[in-house]
Image 1 (tube, rainbow, N blue to C red):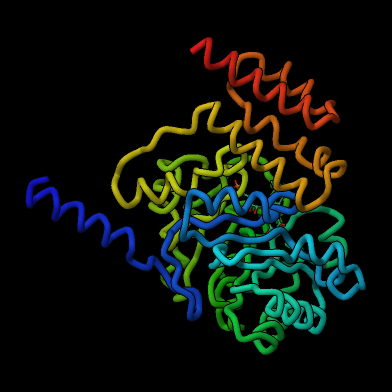
Image 2: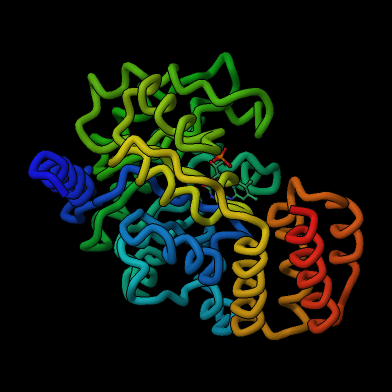
Length: 346
Ligand SMILES: Cc1cc2nc3c(=O)[nH]c(=O)nc-3n(C[C@H](O)[C@H](O)[C@H](O)COP(=O)(O)O)c2cc1C
């Protein structure tokens, strides 16, 4: 290796190891974060993401503050369980009662949360009807009271996740972001869609570009980031400090790592091939079984199959068989067949 290339390598390593941002007192050494997904970002999924990205901020599924008040130890255990190497790990809570959210946050801190994230973006009818999730963007005073109550209750950083607004005519994200910061939020993630859009249309990253002039805490832009190049475009258009990724990691738990690698070296790494994906899927299934027991886990993992086998020959046929199969050994046989056939076909 020449002196010049050694120096270049050193610079790259330094760049890579440089803390990208700080959330409260926590250094976040990656500009990509795993966004929360209910029923998805449980321990097994987070474990797969962490296998590749050692530094990214991980987030649990949304945890209802009301559920945490109930005596359901088994449910709590499944959703609160974490591993040491998951730090930095944010636990996300939902709810609309400041006092209850504060109590819930205390439980999360005790359970090992490094950060408490507050859900102010969920668009689901059942959630917003109760005044939770994105409904809080229509009740900014309550949202502010929640952040203040949670901040008072815990010693760890508190973050919020919200959308551009409730409807196109109510895009209050700018004032909302300022209010959240003034209320004590240590960082925020903005899904660049409105509640009425749900998941339709495209995320408007540009919309939030002026936020960084007003907000000093880190801002993560979210929505539609499915590749390293899209992550770069998002950062350029939004001016955000980082990106948060949800659906993009489905079937591609290495995506966040590939984004980090691209940002630190400029190199685009290839996506995983089918045999690597199937190996990860097998780990995913085994880990879900360890968490939930075989019967429940084999139903639970059905939603993941389409993502892992996307793009292969006869994907629809395999998907059809996998989602109806109830036997562990048969499922693994089908997965082995997929690898054999795909490898033979080249
Ligand atoms: C199945 C699913 C579950 C989700 N659950 C949550 C959640 O619990 N909390 C939350 O703040 N956002 C939740 N979201 C929204 C995502 O975090 C993210 O904002 C959205 O999917 C847009 O980002 P993406 O294009 O990277 O997926 C969920 C999204 C999906 C698809």
